[in-house]
Length: 318
Image (cartoon, helix red, strand yellow):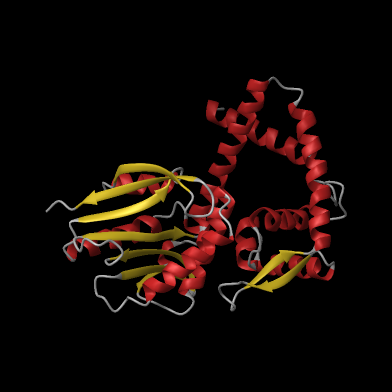
């Protein structure tokens, strides 16, 4: 047996032990009367806020029929309820009820106590190693899933121009991602929606453009070139570059950025400017690849919460 095989087997064995010790083999979990899949659904909504059935399906790795039955039972139990998304009335989101919130708090308390007691048996350096190892391993597993998932790229279309629902959907994608990773709230979502709505009113200018990645008419990503947001006509502003988590690691982001950069070169822009939040590693890798250089760093509260922002500039070389 190769060394890699031995390591793989040991990781699998440890994973099975975690599953058993956390109680996932039981019919109910974490001092609740819920099955693991039901509790995970509540925890996901609690952590990320109201979500659509499609998003929960992808996040929880469940079939559509399974998630539909699960959500129906949770609604009937009074743990979640359907609400309209505030920026896209066509989309229905699932939100925790008061009973759902109380159930989640019981689960949090149980799981936190269990994890804390185990970690207290370990030296501090080992505790940190556990966090780093589990986080990296979970991220790697998710990356493997994403590469095999919805995004068989021949099913993804990239189109340019406005289409119905784009403002609400893009604002929603930004809100979900940045509320989870940076704790940006309602102010941020409203600002994105307001500014994006203003931009779409200027799409008659041939130097303004928006590209959308979609599958089965569901908008999964976007990127924008705004020729009028910066006073210098030779400078384009790259804005609203975002992707659904299901698209990460598939190459769609690079395809969107490539279209935006080529558009700017073809329309004679000397520079492309953009602002991004520090810590967006995947996007930063793409920006580096296309020679967007960090020219400024500042700490700002323009999104309602303090964040470190980077200004990047790409100079067109003829």
